[in-house]
Length: 124
Image 1 (cartoon, helix red, strand yellow):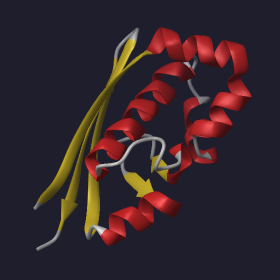
Image 2 (cartoon, rainbow, N blue to C red; image 1 turned 30 degrees about the vertical axis):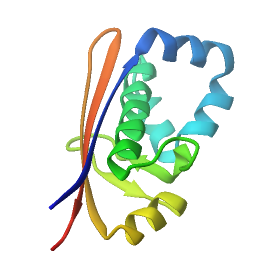
Image 3 (cartoon, rainbow, N blue to C red; image 1 turned 120 degrees about the horizontal axis):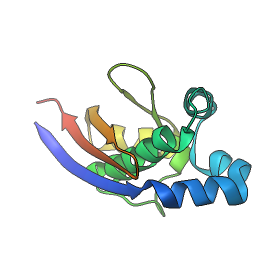
Image 4 (cartoon, rainbow, N blue to C red; image 1 turned 90 degrees about the vertical axis):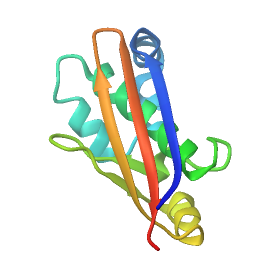
């Protein structure tokens, strides 16, 4: 059964500006170590980081929460192949309390935009 859905779109030019201005600060605030390593394997990491940023926002919406209630790094989106969501800390606790046992995610990016769609699912 679906608990919630979420969608978010990110302007990749904005992500590029953040990376140029304060790469380390932005990365450490919003992404896990594995997300950073994955994205930096590519010539333009802003596409992967932007898609994951949109994904984290979409997951928060599907959980019925916002970025003031969940830490960005508490939501991890795996790279390569089918993306998977791994919840940590407060996000994991919120999901457990709501009996959410799976979060599905779909990511897509173009030259200047990334989009994500998430579904939080509870078992009957």
